Image 1 (cartoon, chains in turn blue, cyan):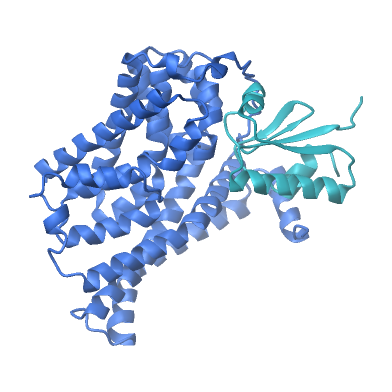
Image 2 (cartoon, chains in turn purple, green):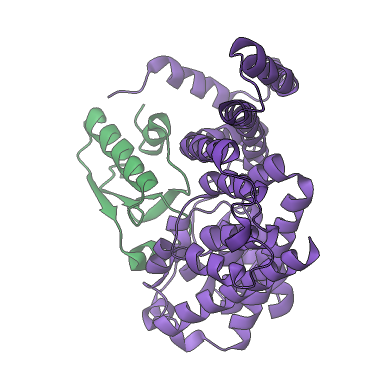
Length: 356
Length: 83
């Protein structure tokens, strides 16, 4: 059960020294290997499916295998790179710093800032409650706090990477912009509705301390290590979902008939968006598992807006999160939160169906 | 200087990262032969009182020394002053 001594001493020497030539060489080597792997991916998978396995891409099995062998490594490569870079960006932001920025802003400006900071501040859904208490007891308005709590889980790097690699940059950008808009608008609405009495009263009675330790590194080797930790943490956790999601997506690609989804997730069905949101809210899956499936469904005739709405409802509103938030919020506020965010997702769904 | 640590609190509502942190701290304390009390705190009141907004976190004798990530054994050793 003891830590390997070799790794331990390597860690210590990396901590004490600055950015040495060895570090730069290691980072440069990693970057070169990454680029080479990414460029080689498409020819390699084409060779693998067509030549090595002898599969015709026109067959069920061939198209499923081709999809999986191209998308799975591509998504994992992109995910590793982006999570590392986002990890470095996040090492500049702590919840404490975000709170200090937000405590001094007016409400509307605060909503916008909170939604943006929700993207870059390190956040894990199990610290939603401590973060909520820390914000509202030190002068961050309730609506501004909600803008943060909506944007932090919904607009995340894993979702954006998957959207980018499976749908392209336009859809990824549209998701990011509309996700931020929902966070800003719903936080603003909750602020206007004066929901403060529906926060559990003990929250305001807590003598919240502010002397949180500065947990983030302040030097570059530390930031790189923080980024690598993020990769191990996040990629280490989501890769089974990515592979599982892409495998299901590959099966849909290969076997589900084209236009199969058109009848109930297509543009023609006006009730498609509300139904997708209603199914999505109680569901809980991380972005990694749901997006490849959504992509495959789109290929079978589902409408983009309906699929996006489903995804946002699954990622942005989840049953476990509302159960956690119930500790600090009374039912009327929880209902308002789900209602307002759900309405925002509906608007986005209809908008995308109308535009694309 | 009374450098004897009496109480270590591992703060977190019970997610896997918090349990992992608790395990690392317990293990470090035991293997170093320290006789301090290690508790896992799940009360949101206590977490808020200590000013913690990102879990898992570690407080030593009421002072937060780490927040928002799972520490490595080495790090806990240096936080506890174990050579």
